[in-house]
Image (cartoon, rainbow, N blue to C red; front, side, top):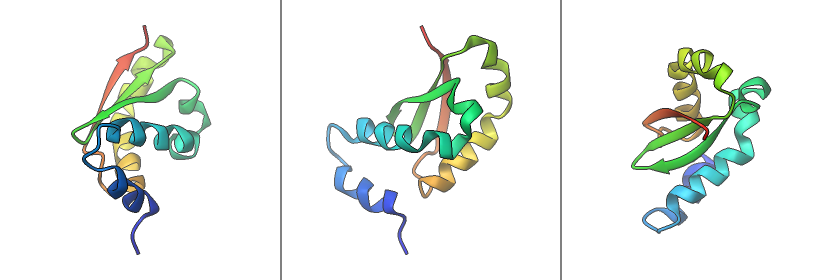
Length: 93
């Protein structure tokens, strides 16, 4: 059975709002995907060409989040049926 994400993604694929839509979906499920502690200090910011940019909003957590980046990517790949191929981290301004 297809993931609901895959079905909804197919409706937005190729549209100008595709990346925006992916980020909005991830924001809605963020704490369930990454846990409450990480969700409090980082968030999905942009999505393009299978890369998700995750914004770190608490600079004191930067090192900790970078250390779990591979595990975070694995969780996001699983949740999106492999649509997220990479993540990059950026500090909030």
